[in-house]
Image (tube, rainbow, N blue to C red; front, side, top):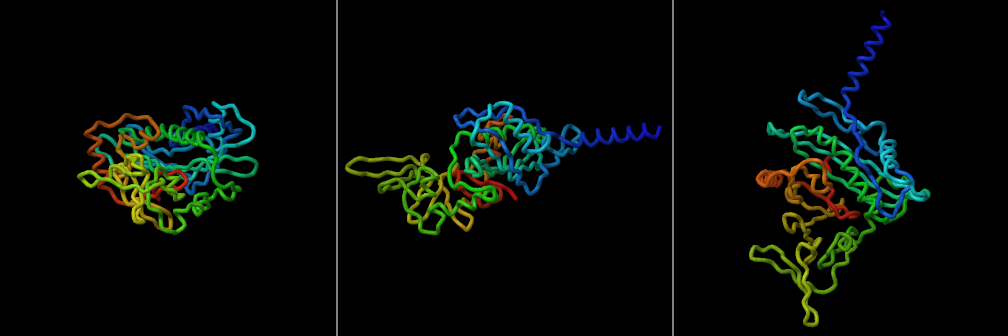
Length: 338
């Protein structure tokens, strides 16, 4: 009888423990459509905090810990092999820096959720690694069941991130395993814009030309509208005018001062020991949607109505101002939270 009671207690404890876990389900695929087949998919888990988050689920708001089915390396490797025929020479490496979920404010109908995401990808040939792509950002979600929505979208975030990396060719220095610990720091001194010299005046169409300090050739003159907003840059050579619209510019430098094109128009791009940054917040940088990851990665969830979008955009712009750095490896915003 005592043994039966012990077994019942153990069984009940196992069930109770299992019920406190919300396991990520890797649905969908990470199919590689490119001509760069990878032999294996490997994950190096460099997260300082291995806990993804403990969130409220269901009508009863039961607190559950979000977990991988087994380990990131085993889970992603199995996911990759479901939809890909392995190649022969090169391995695909994902360096996981951060994956953190949390919930925040609620208006009684919808609750805010945040996914803090940071990862890098590399192609490995032999014992050397070469950079592909990286992303450091915080996705925001708004939903009645925001915990369920975020967990459901974890595979979608990784799928879009990985497929973006597939489409890129390896670039930059080849490094050993130890060089992956902080690859961004390792390579940032390779860029002319980060070497402390005065910036070259001119028009820059992309982040590569800006960080390499190779502006468009010719003497361009900036033109503004009646509100003082830059609308285009114009140069005239041999009686012929060449125009570059403002929306085609990554940035321009005038008298050593750089201004970056953003959703809110051109904003000052300042520099400190960590690189170039815009002083602002999400409202200045991104157009708001029902879920901030929706437009970037096409995640699960509908787009908010126009009235709600305008209200949330205004709220976002009124938030705390911070330094939002420009990643010299990708030209994208590093928008992570400590």
